[in-house]
Image 1 (cartoon, helix red, strand yellow):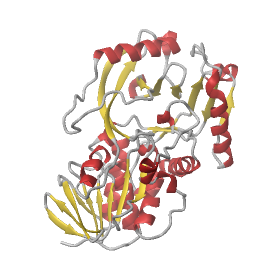
Image 2: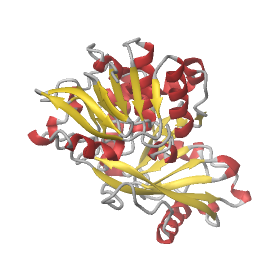
Image 3: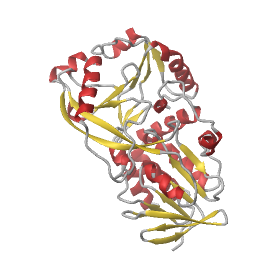
Image 4: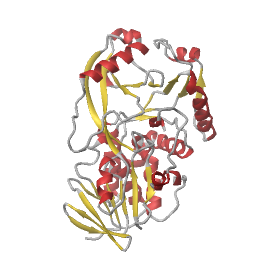
Length: 389
């Protein structure tokens, strides 16, 4: 069969791109997903929606994405379950200069953000023990949303626009002739096409390898713990990321909290992304519980309610690869998000669709090209931890 565009990967980024390609009426669009739309790492994202980044394109994508999360039902007819809580980034003294520079960048781009003193942080949440905290960044409009709802919302809306969604279909190899994409071999047969967007997360590297393209990414197992603070603690009202202790927490239903760690190195590299332990390690539970208790002493008797592990597709600089692949005309990639993909996906899908259609993106994304790794021009943010962007 023939398609005008094939999108590989039904996570939040691929589904968003398929939706915007459908809106652009570019012809026959096929979304190929090895399992079900939204069933991979997207379904297990913590779903934090923040706008604190060091690079202008990421701030702009996050700003536009926040608007789309807020108006997701108007956009797709579905819900992304966005909850506005505010986002608080706690920082030690060595991080304050970079934090202030990022906030200044956000404000220049129209984001509501400010730098807070420890005294001002305490007024936001008096339960915080602010030992080691020299200041913080605060975004009142940020919050969290649901990854599965977002991906399936985009997927269902894409179907209504005529996009064919092939669930339970694996993309096995790309077909290239004379340096140009001519098709995709799938488990349902060959789809001839001249444009392919690969947004397959940790599986992207294997697919690109079929046409001799080296994509430097590792699959990192990342764990999340669900805690239930004592009733006397009340409810966590903010999304908190803590650069002092190296952990994060966000509210969850039933008065519980989802929490994990902020680390510069991958937590555990998984050789085979199809086979890894999806549960949580007790050692990790104890570690996160200790960090939570140090920052929120009145929540120290929190009960363990469960946990899970998912995968990040991590690049050497923790930044994504976006756009055309040099040397293979018609091949585009959007992967290596290192945990950022979900919060950027509502607006990034539109930019990718424009790129695939031969129109320049409205956000300059050239800094995220694949060639930066061969050239040794890796991207670095203002914070010590690259995963913050």
